[in-house]
Image (cartoon, rainbow, N blue to C red):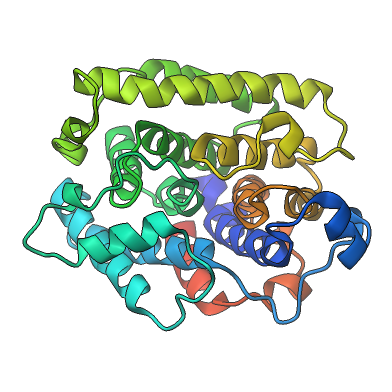
Length: 339
């Protein structure tokens, strides 16, 4: 807890996430040569003016507000968490500010969540493992006072409200765990090993208290086999990440090593790769993540969350942090969870 307070890990992670999102917003859907032709060399990529974010940051804030509401009611538990986060996701979907090219999975699921007479599991897009679930999960790596079971269960539940594929669940859990480890001071050099151990320990653990009968909507014969399918894909991408960290050139497009990030496990791995290539150069990590051929804003927002959790709020220069959209909302949540 002392480490979290001293370096303001929550403020650092949330600010870094939003900065990465804004930096990658104008580069998404372009390849590296086109990005550099338009914006110049990737190491000089500058924060746009205005520094607008995408649905990645908007949904991170929605999740953060939902978790705050659920925790204000007492102990974080499944029913209260699902209710509070469901309400925030519906409000986001209705908002006129939801005009930043959000993913179809989130739009479909949030529309279905409007049916209050139906369980949330009916809204879950069981075959979707897009990165929309784990790009927003950082608040659950930052909120203090949660048990391992609460943190993992809530991370998977918030994913399942929209993205129900087991890999989306596992990648969200793993992303939140990575943020938590870095906020607590874990050394980046050992991070992949810690994540691999966590994945192996949880490979056949289905959080029924949090997920209910979600697994029955897939084709797996048991809940354990359902969730293991997701963890196995995460373990495979961690192997690719481990190889990439020791072999890729920082000048190469990270997507060539760990994937373009449109799916959950690749977004996690490529965001981590950008962070691990430049652990003490947070702006360089963001620039590398934003200048990629894949889902640049989501990759960069994850890289920013990891860097900010590890280095704290001072990682980000004031001339960037002060200009980011939703700055007040980010600071409010950060201040709540830094303390």
